[in-house]
Image (cartoon, rainbow, N blue to C red; front, side, top):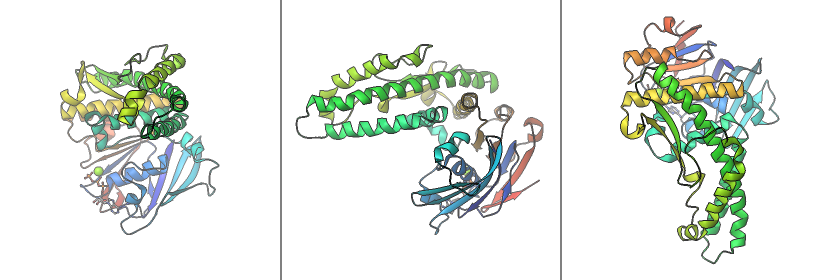
Length: 375
Ligand SMILES: Nc1ncnc2c1ncn2[C@@H]1O[C@H](COP(=O)(O)OP(=O)(O)OP(=O)(O)O)[C@@H](O)[C@H]1O
Ligand SMILES: [Mg+2]
């Protein structure tokens, strides 16, 4: 996948000029608050059909009620003109002038891996952020996962609203929710375990051999459910019926407790994952620079795992990853950038970029929402 050009209309503070990109590295520099992140966010919107930060209305230029992004993108080997118009809840997408039959078909062919500064919080803050990371990555890995998550969420909400009932609940009624919930829980858990296993190996390689960090990085699944492991093994993919039974027994046994708590107290919606360095949790152990290296390694691992699984080379968006890294780590991170199309922002352009990053590099400078090509 390659984004050849983009033009935004009423998108955040960006001026509407047409920008041509390199199929390799695109380096975007500028002072704080000029629009570097906004440009990456526009690329994210046209590729994922939703935003990174806030709601759609946060992305309308102040005082406007909609925005539009138009881009020339090659996917499935053909160059297309893609146009996205966002207004309220509506997202009108056209490809070469006509709406696609299903937006999902478009999402199947375009793929971004993004690393924004707020992603650092994933390893440092509450479990909900890590579950969100898992859900997005599992969906990118296998698009059918989105439907599994949607059904899980709906069934969980239905079970929870039943538990909020003040009156006695017929166990037969709650059982009609426990069965599908157990089946969906098993599917979600298997996807998460397999994803973490694939990411874990790559993350450690990149972290230690690529960036040159001294600790062994490991990813493990954190669950309080007895019988669900913290790491996948070669049999995990075939264990749907075993996990289904574990979850069904869990939900049945927890009915009384859940009724008192008025919610489903245990299940994949409460689970978490941890990254450890030499067995110690990143959150409480790692330095700022090591957290950045660890997150960079995790995102780059996601790129490689996705590229292999989906047979698409994702576009990579890296916002401001260089700050807080020392000279050697910066150099290593730049050397590790994947060979496909990359968009990279930083306040100061790194030195010797041309000798480190392969392919044609385009340089841009953003000033007050105006993006200028420096080449
Ligand atoms: N909806 C909007 N309409 C107009 N301007 C906006 C909108 N949303 C954000 N901005 C402005 O866009 C400006 C640029 O934001 P952006 O996050 O892209 O800066 P940046 O160049 O990435 O800066 P930094 O180096 O600090 O990360 C900010 O000053 C912000 O106030
Ligand atoms: Mg920024």
